[in-house]
Image (cartoon, rainbow, N blue to C red; front, side, top):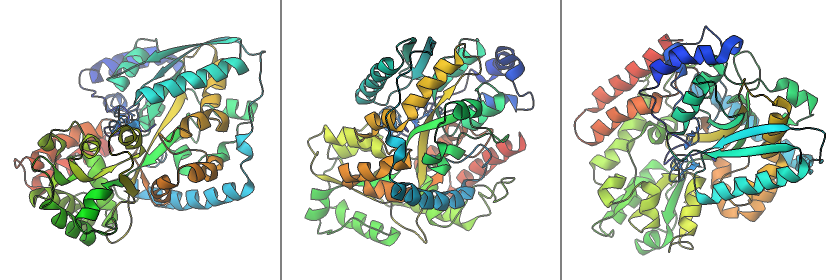
Length: 507
């Protein structure tokens, strides 16, 4: 699941960058793309994050705790264009295509849901690494592996669970020549890993085993497509952000419906402010680029030019407007950080009754369902600025280029992302299905999740191309400085602009 207390696996790459520069090439041999930028290759920060929680986050806000972030990422386990898509704005077209394709697939009747055929002719040993956003997700993976064993009795699977610093540990194993055969990768660092040549292209296996790739949302497939046009991973699920709210708090404040626009949000938060407990806040929202960007998009702004070659952070009026709107909620006392209300992450604040509203992904749902507010929360789309905007976090399964039993490894990857295997995960409601044929049944079972599904049509990918794997870890300290009163908006914009330029120039 996409994760984070943001996205699955927001790993810090400080300390492994120089290691990977030298060791990654040696570990990958002929599979290494020597044209890839060395420092940024190692920078894939959330790939598991999810990494996303974002590699997946990525959620528990990322991890489910945010995006996976362990409780979040999806990751919560903790979004989603292609490695070739370097501009976040470029995903709008993909979103439109996704929506149309989704409707077509649903109408077609979901043939992808057919059960896989048992096959005892394929044998081998496969090691899989995961970064579950929650105990629930870990149990689901165990169930998936148990079902896989019945279908492929001669494939022995060994599971490795990495509870923290997921991507850092995965990259270290890759550099040491001991990478898992199959593992989680969040969309943000996926381009770096693809460019480094450490992942196995899946196209020949997809053709050999007749995998229906068209059933996946196109934008999610693009997240794992290299600039060479080859596919290097299959998305296991995804999660856009939604507005989670305490129904009782809004009702007691005389707010009949959750706010749908920026103006309505400010009015609602102002009304709620005087009715919140002293250790609470109308809105709990942390300073992070992955929470600010949706508001940038809602203001019609972008971070990278349409051709993907330059930063527009300081020149795009929409970027400033989105940042200022999000920050001003905090400056005006309508929003507090998690730490200011004694919570670990925004979802934790909502589950403890210390927030009326938070902006999180589906990774928050199992947390809320375990709380005393299980029947007292709702989900709505993020409020609209001049337009709707959101981020979509995804985590995929990839195969190491050094996997020994590649057919056996692919069969496991294929099962985990198949309609049959994926249904075991999405039926628990931890994340949205990445296969469109599963959407009708998912919607029927979880009607309250519909706002998250609706947001998929206009959400942009949590991905900006090669070199951006550690981007969030680099710019978030500056955003935190703004919220702490140590930086101005102009200084923060300049910091983000410089970071984006340095990564684009390193390609």
